[in-house]
Image (cartoon, rainbow, N blue to C red; front, side):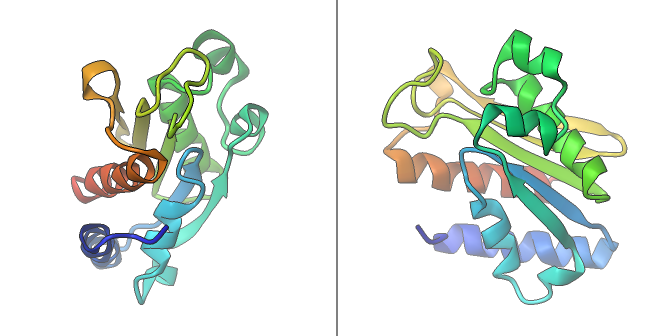
Length: 163
C-alpha cells in the first residue's frame, strides 16, 4: 500500500511545520503497521523531526513498548480511545519526542473483540495534553482493509497538522 496524493501532501506539510517549529515526533502504530511513519519519512528532511516509531500489533507490546498501563488494557482493551491516548503519551516519553502519536483499531475484514471493521482511535500527545479522535459506530471509517488504513494515516496527519 502506498500513500495517496492527499497523504503525501499532508505528510509534506506536517514535516515542514515540525521543522519550522523545531519539534520532534514519535509513533506507536497498531493497525497502520508503520504507514504513518513511512509517510512522514518519505519527505526529504524528515530525519530532523522523526525520532522513531514502534509497531505494536500485539496487545502486550502496547504495554511494554508503547507504555500503556496494564489497567487501561485490562479495563478498555487494545481498541479504545484510552489506549490510543496512553500509546501516544507513552511513545512520546519513551522515544524522547516533543509529540507522540498513536493508531489503534480494526482494519478488517473481521471484527476484533466485538469491534467492527472501521473502528479506529488515533491520538496525538504533547506536553500540553492528549487529543484523541475516534471513528466508531456510524462514524466508523468505511471501506476495505486498505481504505481503513489509508484513512487512518490521513486522520493522524490531520491531527498533527492541527497542532
